[in-house]
Length: 559
Image (cartoon, rainbow, N blue to C red; front, top):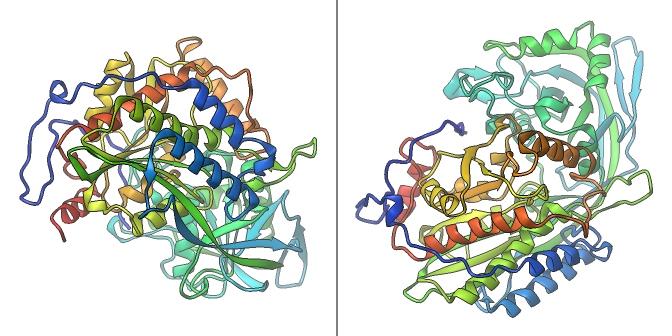
């Protein structure tokens, strides 16, 4: 697996990657001029409000909430003037496995003398399985600390070197070894998280190594969210992509433990957690057998379900077989860990009813302006919260060929903090779409800036990543961190408040008092970028040296 660099690259030219490998230098002034129609704030409010109602039960895939969401989106797409995007159908089936852990035991850690410690499910540890099995029972599994759990041959880094973890429980750290660096220098991109730092990778690598179970040590700074997010996200129904082997290639159990729990475990092993975590940041780290065993068990309710992506299209007038993509995920967590007042519905108003509403509002805007030269696809995907499963399925089973998909824009969780002077670009400098973004921002008097917290790994946490991996250039940005009112301090305070009190929690509910001015400013940028892409014959590519450039060139050359 290759590393994803967030280093800035100057955009010098816009390259048309065509089948003859011709290129065309384009200046910002040469990009199509776009007039933004009146985009509807009322639509943004109405769709966000509707999808956030308790009657949608948090829009979990495979639920009654999904049925209501899909039906509602289809009605809004029809009203906006779109056509069905899947050969006469508005939807694409996405085969999923629904696994709900129940009757979860405590986590029992024992030493060789039989002395044991017990940790409670939910408050101290969370666990689940990716296997289709009615019961998971981990009995006295030997424990090994494997640092960050990374195998990166291109970096000469292997945390599993010299240790056999088959059938064992591995304890791993979240994020990369160099995440505390101030800049972007370091073997793993410095402060910027790479895919090696994501929890998804930790589980994948442990499975490849034959581990029975994985326990990630939660630490708020490197994880980029508190235990409340882990608890609410991991103690309900989990969705997985259907696999040919029914998940047998996966570990038996995947979970997290509080850092305080890890300290107790390491102390029982005669180890100092902080010292071992510090050692794991150095190249050449050797895995540490803890001489302890882990035991846990739980039952699994399993169901096979077909969730749905919702797809609408506006056919182009001149080049209808070339496609511009807008994406947003309609799903959220459904019922989750209850708040103190007993509310257990994670409504997902900001994340991501707002982005879904933007698909509808943009479709209306395109209809007002008239169909562009290229076709525009409005893709509302499922199961983003479960690991980008809906966008991954579409990217691997595209309705419209990726080789004919020019590029796209992803929208995930609009900021309700008010208008900003700048905008935050996730993955700035990676592709020639930056030129379009810069032109759009200039028209709105805003400045594109790199993300201030690359260590949080946002590049891997939304649906654009599914398309980027297969070569399609995608733009993903968020409302800026320098507000017109209150500046950076106010933006930081609002972001921290949302993350602490509403993100992936029942508190993410619609608020009639929200300030929509910043949202509408962002929506204009999304419109401009997509419209410019749809009104030109250029094929923007990834910048020279970017890891996705080769797969895009191969795709565009018909290979």
